[in-house]
Length: 173
Image 1: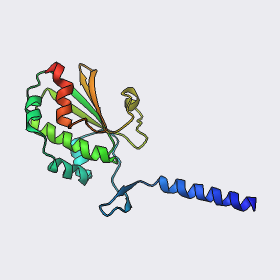
Image 2: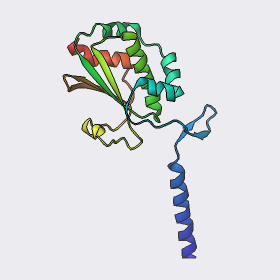
Image 3: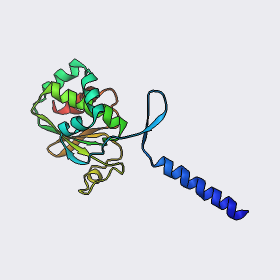
């Protein structure tokens, strides 16, 4: 009897654990479906992401940033670099990174540059960049001036990517 109970407990735990390890997303009807998106890691180009993950293309095309903040970002005359740590598998990254890309496309300010770095689900990398920048959530936008962090946006902006960037950059504008 005790062996049977132990067997049932172990089987139940294994079943629950194995199911929780399968990535899912919620479809519009509320059912779960496995994700089939590639997990891109390391330094990435926006073209790599846009070419391989349709959600990024769709969100970039759909997003309409606030013009007043775009105009402010266009006036930046100090060199600033933004390191973006993202997970191509992550819904927050799929929403915020394409919005950021749209903003950069519309602003076209050579003083405002960015690099994209893909992380796997463990949010760690062989080069130790995620650890160096203390990345716990994705996406994380690390805003740097002269290689010193002046601010960051973690997972979701307070208001919007463009407004949060303007507020972070206000001291150097």
